[in-house]
Image (cartoon, rainbow, N blue to C red; front, top):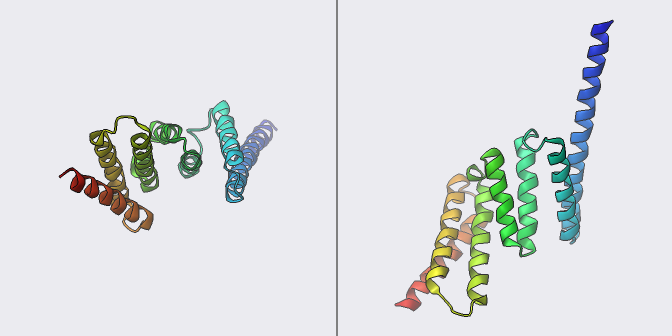
Length: 178
């Protein structure tokens, strides 16, 4: 009798965990739909709600690594699309702290390179004193991230294009300085 009660309790707990996890995955799908419909703020709020739920349960490190990476990557992509580059980098670095996976995932490195490029160009345009040396350093960092992304995923055409574009901009800068 005791074995049946314990087995029922374990089954109940496993079912509850499964339903909760399924609910989180459905929310992630809903956030992707909201973004696709042109509402990045609502999608970002939904992703942050999901992350908060996972953190409050202490389960962010326990969920499937692929799902966690997708959650964090989608948040970072939304922040990038909204021009919140520092917040996007914080999300990417958070994944690196949690699972150590962002340096092994070409998608994260591609986004890091894109963020570094956009941030460098924005800072250069908005600065009163134009320092091409700082821009060159930032572009070099973007190029390095994109190169690493291509090493991990050599068939990624976005990474190839971005790498070539950053390289082209750097070559133009070097040509103008000479």
